Image 1: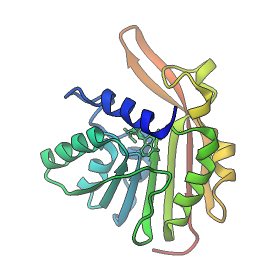
Image 2: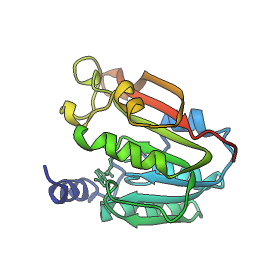
Image 3: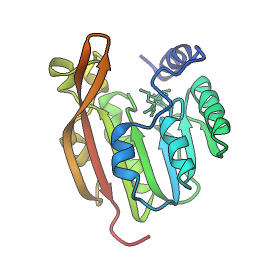
Image 4: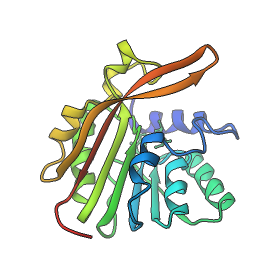
Length: 204
Ligand SMILES: C[S@@+](CC[C@H](N)C(=O)[O-])C[C@H]1O[C@@H](n2cnc3c(N)ncnc32)[C@H](O)[C@@H]1O
């Protein structure tokens, strides 16, 4: 699927007024970033803004980047509901460039082709200020055979090994497959995610 088709598919998916995912932050984002003091952040592929708004509510200055206008519109409404400001940027994640280095880049379930993932991760790593953190959470490739939900195509899934290999000179703090329990009508199911947390050496 080319970029224009992918954008239209996401816009269609976000057309309904309810949230496709949830308005709550991802559980690993919440667990790992709660203690991190606020600064500047980019949420790359921010979708409906659940993570961006959560960060903004904790004092972060967040730029939410997504190529879906429909997703960003919902993120804007969620920010307004919570009385916070999030800068919304409609842009392709593969070509976006921030104006200045940031303290946090969040990449949460950004489903792009495997061939593009390394380039995106290398660029995102380069946006970090000294001490800045890169946080990647994504559907792990092993989820297709052994986990619940997620995309059926291995081409848009990640692995900790491939993610780490793309990070250049960042220091890797965590790189593993993590289990995410999903409540379903038939009971809890387990999804398998790639989690990678890394930082640029130096202090903020
Ligand atoms: C599975 S959703 C995840 C949304 C959000 N990060 C979250 O965790 O709730 C993937 C998002 O990535 C966006 N996306 C996919 N490819 C993109 C690209 N090339 N540039 C910008 N956004 C993209 C989609 O529009 C969609 O909002």
